[in-house]
Amino acid sequence: MSKGLPKRSENYSEWYNELVKRADLAENSAVRGCMVIKPYGYSIWEKMQRALDDMFKETGHTNAYFPLFVPKSLFEAEEKNAEGFAKECAVVTHYRLKNDPENKGKLIVDPNARLEEELVVRPTSEAIIWSTYKNWIQSYRDLPLLINQWANVVRWEMRTRLFLRTAEFLWQEGHTAHATKEEAIAETEQMLEVYATFAEEFMAVPVIRGKKTANERFAGADDTYCIEAMMQDGKALQAGTSHFLGQNFAKAFDVKFSNKENQQDYVWGTSWGVSTRLMGALIMAHSDDEGLVLPPKLAPIQVVIVPIFKGAEQLEAISEKVLPIVKALKKLGISVKFDNSDKQSPGFKFAEYELKGVPVRLAIGARDLANGTVEIARRDTKEKKTYEIEGVVEVIQNLLEEIQENIYNRALSFRTENTLEVDSWDEFVKTLDEKPGFISAHWDGSSETEEKIKELTKATIRCIPLDAKEEEGKCIYTGNPSSRRVIFARAY
Image (cartoon, rainbow, N blue to C red; front, side, top):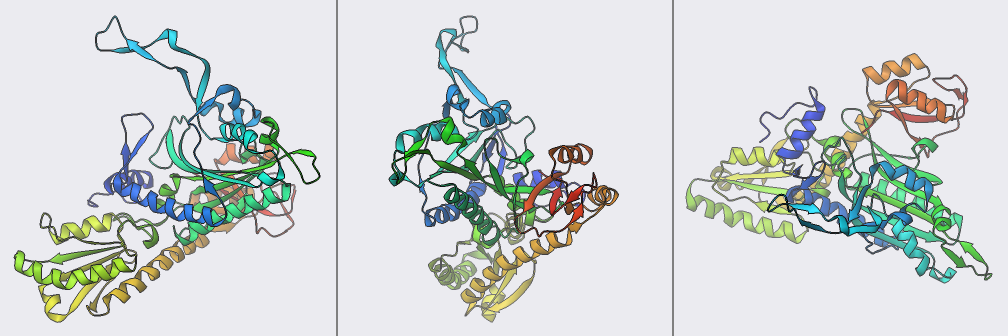
């Protein structure tokens, strides 16, 4: 259980890795760099999926599915995209195995089964999707085309960490085509706001909305928008991206349409995605040394009820009071578990559900039954209070809303306290080392300066905030003029 869980203050990385495993979220698999998402972890991902999918459909998008494999020639068509992902690609070269004549019971690749053309296991799906869109789009009447897919992708990572960076991960990727540049930009911005709303309202994670610099832009995009979140160790985590692709992929795959004037033109494109990396953000933004702290909207179990009893008779009496509460909560759409098992002690159960981040815990024993009361503990503050059994359903309903809001406000206060403005290089370096967090500072706009700062400090420009105000200043590194501040941080 949570006993022996490393402390965040002593070893944040080890605390994270151990918590993911002990809370039954995920584990390393037999395949190097890949993970097994366990049922409890997948339940959280399912809730994320459900909420996001509803938001996508509300904005007019529909789901489809495209092949896992991309012919190398298609992958090469958009040169910047191919170059950007080339080093991360897994490639299929053969289509068959055969028995090894030298080792009975073993298999070898059949050298006669080499593919005529290698297949790239998708690191992202622009190539296969845009080659398909060429057949789907002929006229302005076919636009806008608003497609999303839920899928897995492979990016061959050498150094991996559960949820944050794995060779295979789950995600969604939206790919849309539009008649005008303005429509495509509006789509890109709209989907960024969908992601930001999801992060803040469901994950309870405050985010900064911004644009990436040219150096950090998605390969093949004209502009990349992002949301950046702060973890409890002060590091940044990119929680979602939305890309304005211009006409780059349309030109690479010859996707044209007849406009209202009956003239041929290339469509304008976008792509946008979030992945199981959000699970890492959820864990690192809120959890503590006792285990997970989950926002109620994403908790697989929102309420657990633990009876404290001796013998079947006491359990039966407690159950008589508890079951109507369970029924009423479920009717309100609240997920509840009545843990009446006698395999573990109440103390063991308390520790288990604390580790797993269940937002609200009810405990009820014979004395509570006699008094007509129940003890309620909230996971976010660890506060315990006694309430009358009558009316407890409304108490729980209100409490879940309060916990969701409190978790968000706590994360927002943490970000505010750990975001500093600095105006000199010495102050910048000192702040990075002594007070990790977001640094708001001036930058001269050059890629060379950005690369030099990254080389010297391992800090990157996380984004140019969309709400950054015009402000004359001097670049912290070169002293050259700057018109606005950007956000620097070390990142995952």
